[in-house]
Every structure is written in structure tokens, then in C-alpha cells.
Length: 111
Image 1: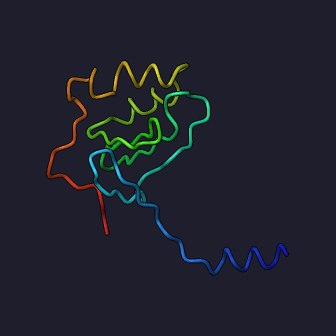
Image 2: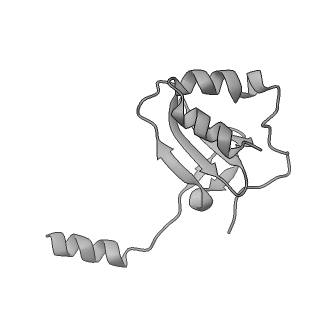
């Protein structure tokens, strides 16, 4: 049984995950480091692409995308005693004044 599972995993193609953001953009997460969040009642998942400084968060089951987010900000988010409070006070669009808004034509999706 274990040998069959190992063989299946070894031969299964690696498929990258694609999500749809609240702005109806498809984003391929192959360049993102994603973490499922279990210690927050606000955030369910955080994905970050260091090279693009792109942050994607799942809040209430929907994905939102933020651009120009520094590594330091993401590290502070992940290490905050209350991730939801940090997110709501520092990153969320309504409080950041559009600081992390993504350009309308910018595309994170890669082939």
C-alpha cells in the first residue's frame, strides 16, 4: 500500500494552483509561498511572492491581492500576536488608503 502511494506520488504531475481574486483575476500561485493560517479568525491563508512583493490573503473564503508589500510587512503580519488585527490596521484597503493597491493592468499570472 505504501509502495503504491509512493509510486503514485512520484509519477503524478505537479500542478500549480490557480485562484481567483475578488477582482476576478486568475492568479497562478506557483511563485508564491503559501501558508494556511490556523491561529486567526480573520485570515485563512497568506500567500507571498517576494520577487513581485505581491501578497494574497484569504479572508472570509475570498482572496484579495495586494501589491508593493514589503517582506518586513509580511513578516510582521505572520508574527503578530493578532494577525487579523495587524491586517485590518495596516494592510486592508480601507485603512491603507490604497497604499497596496495593484495597478489595474498589472498581471501576476504567469505561464
